[in-house]
Length: 415
Image (cartoon, rainbow, N blue to C red; front, top):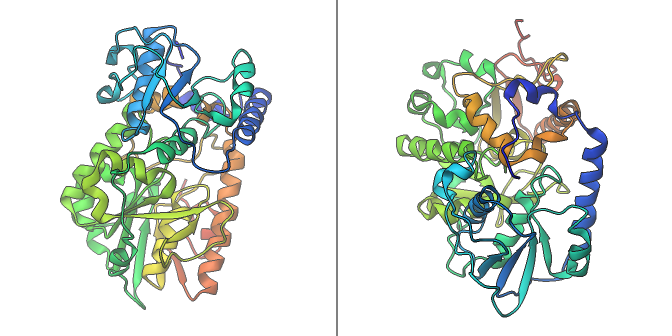
């Protein structure tokens, strides 16, 4: 963490498979650490002790930004050895500048009950971690695809202030926009989204996601009922990219009366920073072991899967209408090497992407993009079949490579 890794967007296409053996070892190490540090119930502590010692101003600035983002409403103090460097945004330029500040590091190790937090967990730190495993959490951004964000999310839930803002059960407010027998348009952020003329849309319910919030002309013309997102890296991280997304989200919400839909793992962090969104935010609970289902009841539950389309967009659309139009979900052709292509009109710059790579190196370093896409295709087929079994009609309206959409009549992609 002494410097920002240089991974440009062109390089990212092949980066996921550079060190597959190392990646598997790191992922397995993280899984073992998670199992070893499981605890039967809520952990009570008076302060968090971060390990190992920070050695440079860069490390301290980076760690401080993460604490400020993920733990804004913590009810206990924080301590790390070596916190005597100046904390300045210039030391961690990949982080959102407003987050690079002192989170309240204690000058001396506090007294009382402690929970140990490992911001780096390598061979040198392993003996220490094993000794403290029942009072420890791992938030190392270099171990696994979710090793930092999930660890911090667990800490936030355990140690948040009793007065933290949370979304009430807003599902009833969301479902007040239902159109029984009507149509819902779900629009992804693929290149084919540009083929949709907002003036020609006659869907009863309109659902947008992710970086579509950048296009205020689209927001004004489409008047979305729902804006959904849930990515722990691009939307819920401390990077400059994620900070810009959240700024664009707030601007978009000023232009429309859309409801916000997001997931349980990260939604509470957003609301801790932006409590003004609580009344219009629906947080959907769930996990990867859930069955496919249409959200209803309290709490509202969905299956959490590969991306926002299968985890949020389609389940919400199933709850709100009976004919589901799908646009802007292009998938990827066999020769592509990254996740998939995006609509350039709403895509963030390569410079912004670089800040995500630097903030969450493990998210990109060891992912197999082909395997990820194959899993997404399987999940989408399962979910669409589930929707059809529950009386939903599926109508792809823009070209796509995805087999489940091609099978249901998506126009061919014009190369």
